[in-house]
Picture 1: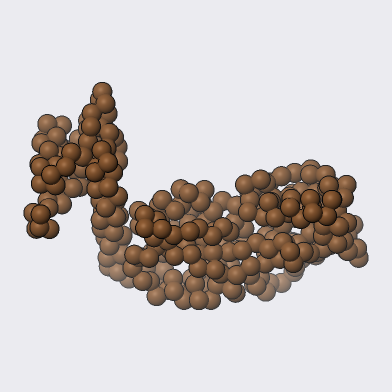
Picture 2 (picture 1 turned 30 degrees about the vertical axis):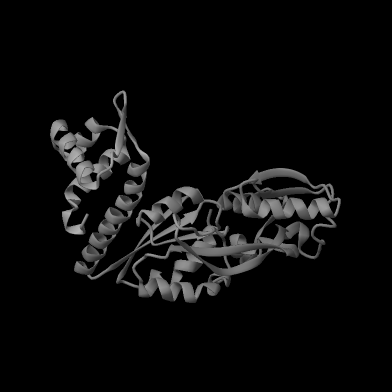
Length: 309
């Protein structure tokens, strides 16, 4: 079969039916008659020489060949959507950069990372937060340009990711300045029995911290386990407990003197990664961000003062 015999209009219809799993809903979305949609799907199957669907009641279930064709269709139409978005941005004299960040990543780190773009009038930002798996699917569908993560991801033939290491930061133990300003603790040796707020079980740091305590036969008392870094920041600031977290999370509170570093462990490190796809269109501004990413771990200088909630 030659490429010029492939009807991309039929492929578009197949893509919508496969994505929705229902012929009627796809016909309503595409504003075509259900019979016409069925006919065009059959024509595509005839040209490909493979059945793409099996019927299970009212549902359309993909065959093995259909699953393979869907993976290609998602790339084809995902790239098409990306192309249209890029052209629309060029017409407006702007570049839209779409950044996804895992929900457990520090918001301060994210802000530091995009800071070079905040004063650029030619760039529009789309920022999304979510679970790593969901963000990677959107990346593969060309709906995101980059995903910021504190976990590395492997690449394979079906998931052509490029995972770039951006830097790492030792984990700090922080506490209220009024109590801990002149005190220092070893991490983890001095934490036995102390009340702590720590990252939750889903956070990449938690396994490291638990393993470190177990090796030292240290058992702290966990008063709060928090996946969300902005919430852990508030707890560190307002609870009076000692808190285990990356320093970048509470950079403003440390600078203003609300919190102080009580201890630090070089054995505990949060690593930062930028994940892209190997097939992406090269964006010069994104490349510059990636090259200068280590600066995101250096907090911006500000005048000390009250920290807003």
